[in-house]
Length: 119
Image 1 (tube, rainbow, N blue to C red):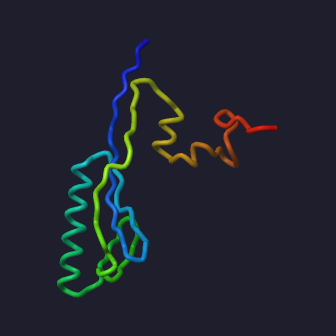
Image 2 (image 1 turned 90 degrees about the horizontal axis):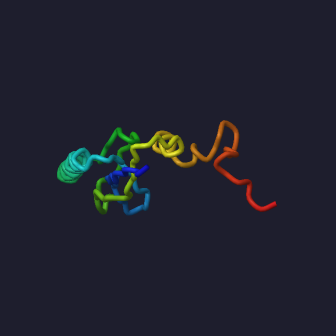
Image 3 (image 1 turned 135 degrees about the horizontal axis):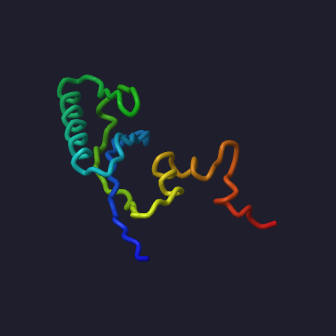
């Protein structure tokens, strides 16, 4: 059986701040969606600087702060995800819930994923 895999890129848009309280605004596999969000953030940043008003956002966090704190708004490729035509329940759970949730069951580590370490 040959396995057919397709690699997809994950992109993220970040607001980098002088106080190092950086904000990840979006994480998507669609470059176009990330680019549209990046353009809107840059436009909002420009207008808040020119109007001397706080830079505000409601997604992913509700916040307003001095636009002078922003050093850069960047769109970057961060990871490649391999998708297989075969069902991999661990990969599906990780993509849906995140790595830490995959490694934890209801109350602790899932025994079928972790070996228990040295005894």
